[in-house]
Length: 143
Image (cartoon, rainbow, N blue to C red; front, side, top):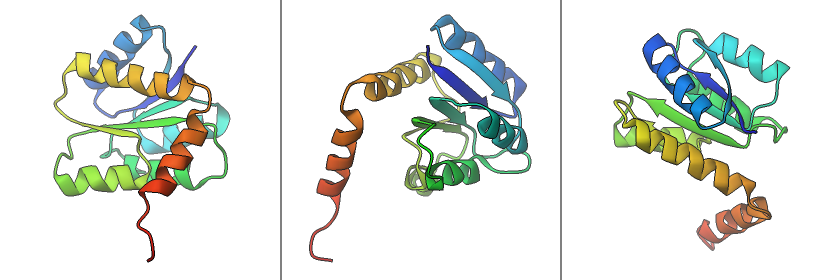
């Protein structure tokens, strides 16, 4: 079963995500701020982290950076769901290590489809090797 951490300070959005992910068979833990998220991440393992960017305390972007800079591969996927929708924000989120980025307001069915896609991507055998190979092929040559 997929275990997910939702980090969202807006109660209605957090509750909506939680309800629908549970209906999809996801084991969900939900918190409302960055400090609680970091505590949960230190105490438990999650295969998916859903992050709002603008959180009280530690930002979702900072959490994303910390997760990707740690040597532990415990978190497989990071999905940012945030009101920061400018191109520069989307790029910053993806460059910080998010696997996907959904601007708010969002369509619930698209959110669920993207969660399913992240789940499939990381379930398939050899996906880590293919991901590393793609990254090395995407790098500019001769720089």
